[in-house]
Image (tube, rainbow, N blue to C red; front, side, top):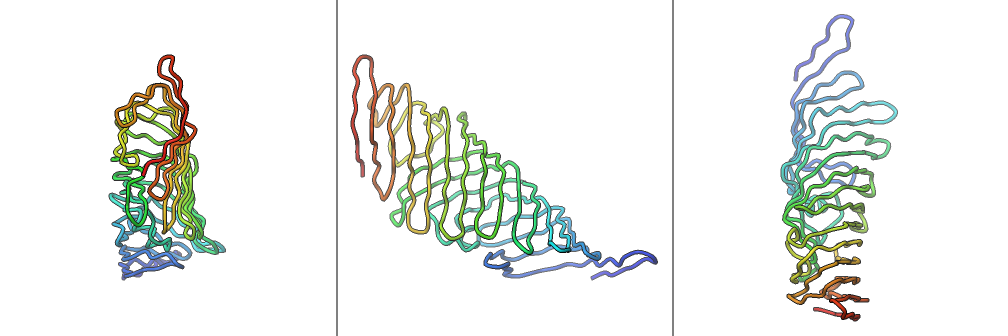
Length: 276
């Protein structure tokens, strides 16, 4: 620790800090290491390193202002942060969700008297998978996607407002939240998803480009996928279905394709399919 004070100026304290198994409220943070600079009412650092079972992240150019409210700001940087384990650390519990996140996002807000932090930026997500539990059947999986979104964090949930997504050549939008008590819920929409950009959808074979409008949600016990599908040229398990509209819902190991309506040349068809 270094302490100094020049005549007529506020004292300055600089020192290394280490906090092992750190926890704020119900949120487990892990091991925290940094070099701090403290002046009356202000705590700052060039970098805070946080390491836990979800991975490692850093908060760059972090500033904490102490007053009636405790205000914080900084840039959050992560190279490979695993979401499922992060949610466990935040007290959500186990969820049927996996992804590795990488990004550098500026954030600012308050941590007292209440947690209210806003972030905005771009992330790269790899190895995204939503699966059923406990059998761990894949509901949907992508190798990589890029997301730009505004994020708000409070004591109850992490909220993602309307964000832009890009998966390979496909683009779309999404919004949703992760609730620390009830699990996650995300809405998504795309005018054209190419199945070449999808690693897996219920472990079935598809070809073509489709428009999607749906949602996925889950908690510690289960996850579901529910979406409307439209396509002008759709292949399913090597069968050409032509122009197609269908509602698809995956839940508890079953894929239900309902209100099927399609046409191949002059032939029109309707129906429902249940797969397990």
